Length: 432
Image (cartoon, rainbow, N blue to C red; front, side):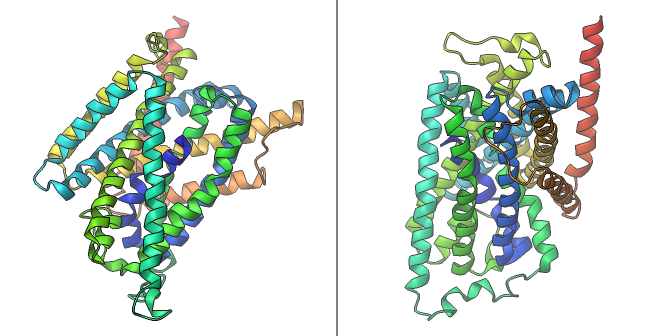
């Protein structure tokens, strides 16, 4: 359920408006291509997580198989990534609440959810797990229900086939902005997949990682086919792609436009749940990553402390405290905050994914030299690793072409420099 929760969030429910504007109906191909690449990256992480299930996941593997700085970089970058994702999700919460309460300032809703979910995570890991289970269940049932309802509307349409699905190729064709438009949309699509690697983070606390991790990772591909490609196919058939705006979730807009206001209200509740769910996962993973960094000496040792119930309280409070910045962003930039945040989060996610791919190259090379037997072997090694790296570099290049996302591209090398300086400072302190 945690894996499902990570796969379905604001990137799909709200961010898809941006991808639809760039790609039109071809957004289905963008989600399929991005999803296939993410599946291969998750198989690489899964291979390492099954062999050595630890809390802290790929940061631990990067340190062990690649080097001290890559491990330091992976851990702090992942923490930074999820802080930004937290901000994006809380921004979306404010947008969704405006559907019912148009006069409610976005920052008020963001602050309220931040306080409640932080308090919940401070109780114990069971409180997080139970909450995430039910919120993930709401999302899954809603997506399936929405696809079924959408198909019903398409099949019962007065227009005969193929006119009832003609929105897929009218209004400029299936590729209204060409292959270039579809390629551009990958920059936003990849944000949707950020969080799937949470499967690896939870490995250290899973009861039977040899069974549960392969099971969760192998389900990624069909989840992508149903939840992303299937959903987009239904939405694009129901409504012209060029009439979907950014005022609310495209899911809510389209069902409101086809004359089912009740469905729009239900879906708004679902997308709100989705945003809160991903924020819940962000708080959980951030605190565990800080704990893992502290255990290896890459973060202050005080972050190793746990409450009587095994909760890294300080890690949760620090992560939530920094996430408070989003309240100010939504106060000063209520309309633009979301796209800025997802562009920075996508850059940070690319760093995490590249780290996983390169670490896996080194892990597999070492394992084949030393013992040969691998429990959960990732396919097409090493060629798929190189293909994934080229694809991820391409995503950053596409980001540089989108006005709302260009700002994040120079932030990427600047962030890497900050991490390098932090690592050098840590090494100097160790020598003193």
